[in-house]
Amino acid sequence: MLDVCLLGSGGMMPLPYRWLTALMTRFNGSNLLIDCGEGTQIALKEKGWSFKPIDVICFTHYHGDHISGLPGLLLTMGNADRTEPLTLIGPKGLERVVNALRVIAPELPFPLKFVEITEPEQSFTIGGYHLTAFRVRHNVLCYGYTIEILRAGRFDVQRAMEQEIPKEYWKHLQRGETLEAEGRVLTPDMVLGPPRKGIKLTYCTDTRPTDSIRRNAEGSDLFICEGMYGEKEKAAKAVEYKHMTFYEAAKLARDAHVKEMWLTHYSPSLTRPEEFMDEVREIFPHAVAGKDRMTVELDFPE
Image 1 (cartoon, one colour):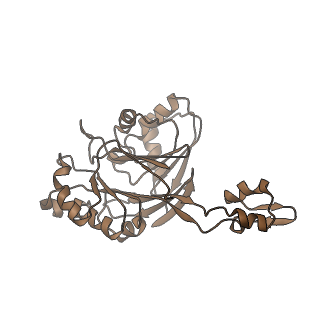
Image 2: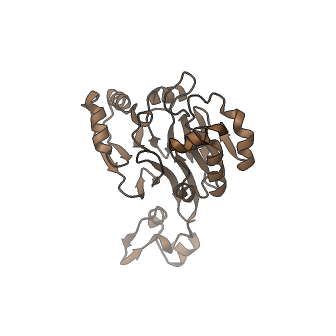
Image 3: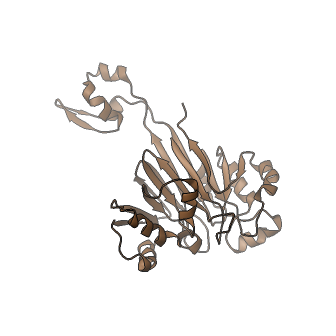
């Protein structure tokens, strides 16, 4: 099961009623955060989720509303006596940008591991998550992320018994491990069926619609997508500043055959996103106007 929380749903600046867009997921004891703008710590506190077990922070890009909350979060983690390493993933320039921000957080009791994205599309496996970063189209280098929890095939007891594989090795094979035992090489494919459907979440902000978003979001259980503007008269502004309207996001969700879409990253001038949702749902019926601290549990299909 994957716990998902949209900590904030705003763009550009935090507001009294809306924090900046950030996402947190929890799976099997491993926590992942995407983006960390000003006020992200407060959003976490309001939700009641802890910052201490965060293992990975991913950044879409380095505009202030997506990273300016990082120094404070690092200091808070340090003050909580964290010693475990923290992995940071982001576009080129990650280490330079973070070290510049760390002028006000120079000493930490835990190491930082920097993983810079160097390709238009790049995958990582960390903390039980299979991450795919994919380039999108903003006015600076920017990436979206797909988070997948992969699921192995079902263990076939009959096949294991027919091949006389001792039971003491079953759990290792079920975990995908290859073993050398009793003069034989035992591999997972000897006892596992075809891979089963896992969990898939796609997240993107600060971008025009791109084919990379559609491809990577294909079949997602949840698609969290920027909707900077709901007002149709602001379509030209979306093009100029490399953002998306509600309706463009809905078309991406429809074309990618996702199960559900949450809109996020609203313009500060957009005070009531719900007012535009009837027209959005004419394009994609399973669209939701995201709200701060909106949460869902995504589970494996039976």
